[in-house]
Length: 217
Image (cartoon, one colour):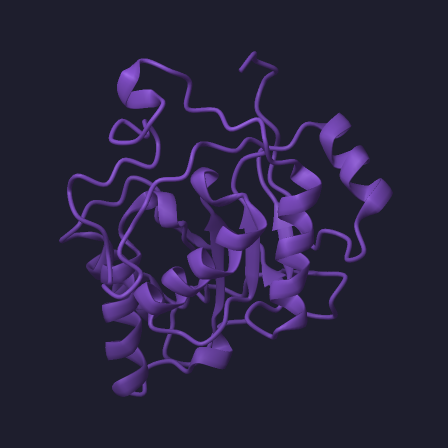
């Protein structure tokens, strides 16, 4: 539902298996450029949007975090009124990388928790280092191409076949146990992959986004 400060019509919500509800209409931030994404988030919140869809891979969470901090400080919206989605990036699927990468997202967004954390893609890339102590990423950071790390730098594949979806999912379950996220889910999964995940998941996915066409990796 919309607060009095927004002029957006009432937005229906979908109940999740956690008991929470996710607004059916939200602001997507993919390809939202630096210098523009903050203004877009502020305008959306003023119009009554209460769902903001983010991802580390979009490389703009630090600007979104600055905007959220300003909106909270001004009293225009409270954290508990928002539903914020984040996504685990492909180079961080190993168990030991999952929580630190989420904590980087929380630092960038300037929030203490996410309402929903998705595994962005059902494929792992080789690990790409980053500075966990700074907000945002430098221009040289390349989580899609992994061009600055081996074996990609020497012409090898960026796909990491040493980590399973099961390992990644179990690490995400631990994020929920720790109270760092309110719900976990998946993105870009095929029906077959989702069916397999459901066969072993201790905590079932609270949400999934549409799967892409089949393609070879």
